[in-house]
Amino acid sequence: MVNKQKIINDPIYGFITIPGDLVFDIIEHRYFQRLRRIKQLGLTSYVYPGALHTRFHHALGAMHLMLTCIDTLKSKGTEITPEEAEGAIIAILLHDIGHGPFSHALESVIVKDVHHEEISLHFMNKLNEYFNGRLSLAIQIFQNKYHKSFLHQMVSSQLDMDRLDYLKRDSFFTGVSEGIINSDRIISMLRVHNDTLSVEAKGIYSIEKFIIARRLMYWQVYLHKTVLCAEHMLVNILRRAKYLVQKGVELPATPPFAFFLKNEITKHQFFNDVSVAEIFSRLDDYDIFTAIKMWQWHDDKVLNILCNNMVDRKLWHIEIGNKAFDESKMSAIKKRVQEQLNLTAEEASYFVISDSVSNNAYKPGDDKINLLYRDGSMIDIADAADQLNISVLSNTVEKFFMCYPKECVLKD
Image (spheres, rainbow, N blue to C red):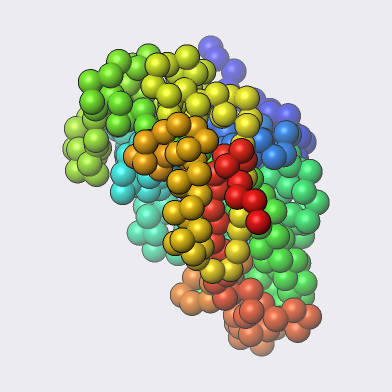
């Protein structure tokens, strides 16, 4: 008989216990094991060399926090049955199972207009069939269709176990100390009031710190300008590869990756053709980067240069500002790229990237972080914070950027 009472040694929390046979069997399934081969932060290791942790790490960490949160809420009188606890644990464990290679970087490239959460739900339904309906409650909680809404809030909200883990984990592996949060303190302050997950008022400063940490991590890590440049270079490699394959050019690739290069998959096809999702479930970071290494020697000049730049970390020059870049400057740069690299106008378009990113640390509204006071009243953190103006952090900040090869920088 297989021993399913396992303990995992995690660098963030120490020992993590796998709570039960069903959870063990889900972790052992190949859908979940695939997460070992998908980096949590895409190409962020090009800036922070330690950022090599995976979605597998993160899912187990979020599961551990869910266990802690459930125990905390039960100790404060919240009724959570063993079946509900198992459902919430499975829901958070599988919340990222639909991520594709390099996490968010290629989300709209491999399969267009399909969010990873939709794919996660699809795989959860497939696993539910495999496990004879034992994931039904977890799926209801994941979709917020269960009558206890606070269980869904623990899985997906502005103060969920997902965010508490990824901030702490990403801060640890990148070494960016500004992202450090006290997840134990925050969880110890959680309560359920009127079926709503809330924070005891005395935990206000821990929540302020959490929101500030999230904002800083976005600008310093998730939306770091060099990471943005690397990820857009990766996107353009796939754009070029798809273009060539659909023109009839042979490109070496693993079978799952070759399938998505050759076919433009619609949302309808993905969820209605059983084989498509199964092929996607075989795709990970290794498929993509193995192909990029092979394409370094391809005859197509654009693909050749792009892949060599990516493998050797020859990242491009990037400019960032608060407003869109002038069209005349963009045109001058494109012309210089054409001349310097001896490319056509169409080929040069792969080497000049212009886009924007936005960030807001907190979004007031229906999904808000509520502070619970002794008289039973609940106040949005944005209205209650007395040390920091959290409402200011709810404003969306947009930044524009442009990147292109360093040898094509225009001299003033």
